[in-house]
Image (cartoon, rainbow, N blue to C red; front, side, top):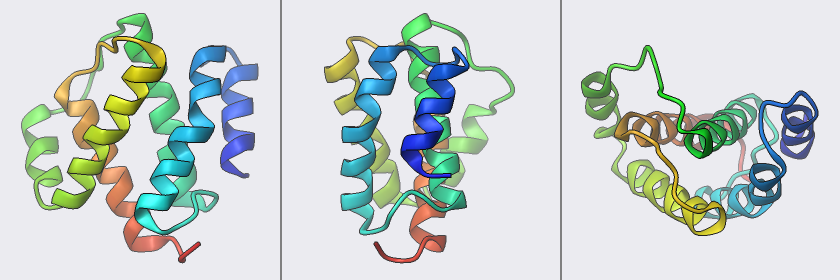
Length: 124
């Protein structure tokens, strides 16, 4: 399933709104360009799904549960490039969508998804 198909499925199932769906192509393209890798594989698909759902939660102000912020931050710290990119992606999303109520643990989790894509996906 491609990144575009994933976003469409999330929109059709009501898990994300049209604003998040509209923001995802540019955000995904920026991520792919920064990593030098496509996002249509398994790791990229997980990243796209997580990002879209995180943005939807942030727009709704829903709390994130079952994330240990200290553990996530410690793991994300081992991937400084991806941690910076995660911050840039969330900043870009906030510029497109307005304020997002996301805890630091979300940025750390996004960084881990980015690191997985960087490590596993073939170059675009």
